[in-house]
Length: 309
Image 1 (tube, helix red, strand yellow):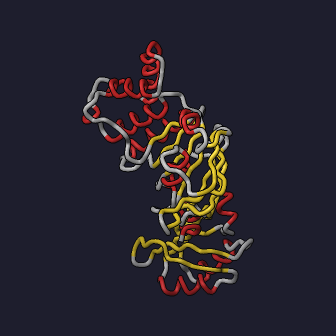
Image 2 (cartoon, one colour):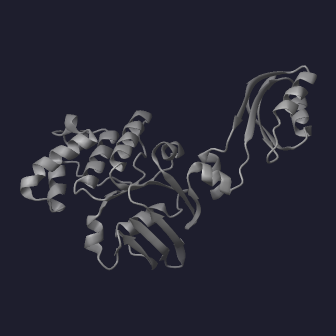
């Protein structure tokens, strides 16, 4: 559905995107991650034809965006980070205006607005001025304008920025609902949203793609190990020394403190080694107590930090 080939974008001597290639399949929700300034928004603006690339190409359903811009734009719905709303208009007026701009037949506009209002949960505010809406409802209106013309592709740039946890959940569920019928590229800094919403993740840093796949695949690519978390009651300095002296331990990190003599530790064993028995035996021999014990795999946040540091 979307093919990005050797895409480069420069502003003067500054390279924002550096020869990236990427494919997004039909019906896929792709999470696009990266630190500030990595090139996420630049990529989205090129896909949507707001900016032209310095070199490389973008194909939308086989159509080159620079050769047939109007055809490619008709296939895309775009929600930029700053939602394009006219605050002095009421929600219905704004959606009607968008429908007209998008070339929807006059006798179909009322019906299409009704469908979009239902899909985006706007029925309670349809007659309200946009300036009176909460941030969450403004994002809903932004999504409504993006899907008004029934595009095959949705490009969503930081759609949950500035929302409270309840609003984030509402927008996430809405994106998942819309994503059942469309191809979606969804950028965010909230890594939990990617895990909950996206089929696949692409991580970009300094204009280059540094990771691609689902969270487990990304963890495997960077050689991540399974970690052990243990909370031990005992003298901190002695406990840490004993844990580091265990055979096959790569790293010990103090994670949290419950009281003066109770600390949590994250232990990284050597690849393929099960430390649980040796660890338990050491603690018992020292007459300390294990209060918590669990195994954990590298999270998407850990992967993100590793790939973008």
